[in-house]
Image (tube, rainbow, N blue to C red):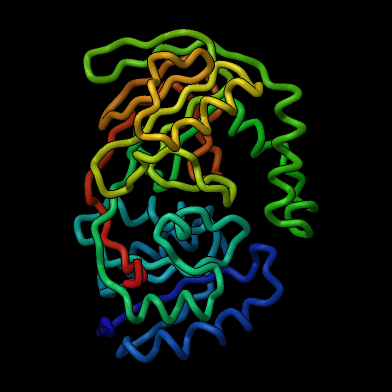
Length: 300
């Protein structure tokens, strides 16, 4: 069944290393127009431009469509999440990883993604809030933020996802542990780690995380703490695919679920939120259940 909207705004950024944006628009706009009475295309020229225009569009549009990657989606979300009037959102994958669009079961082929949205449905989706910022997919410190910093922009443009794997290999060899203290659900956790993830989405770097409980519609985040970057950590991570795995027996990983937590580190650590870095610990994190409405494929 086709969903209909009176007015929608589609945001795209041709300056984000994208040489074939015209082709992407040609693949999607005619399809989307079938279910949208008035479709406005806006080419944003900077992050600030996108922020301002998202806030403006939210007051008049029924639907905001983001054609871009995880960073563009993150910027848009941070503009819309604080508003009282929040329109329905949709993602068309136009970046390198497109991780949260994968969580929403969106095809990574643009024409198929557009067709599935036209025949889609509207669902509530949780969002994470940390201090005054918001994240949709993940919050992370340690190995994840170090990996993002080590990505070579030239490699990213030429090799896409492969550049992240190359960066990860470089970073693992140099991983340094840090001390942490976490307060959640009346319990205190502390120790040393090389990575801490607070997860809302199911994918990071295009790879599906082997954590069966991940669900962006359940009002909780999955917290994953890795004490070391070794094979034992990887084996324990893979075992999380089994709902009956006994986490209490793990020696390299700690995994728990919560709706609110405080994280402190021995020294301030750079935070990676959805692939963007502009904040440092300490952080207070809470899950806002069903805070945003997303148009998603109806064939799940």
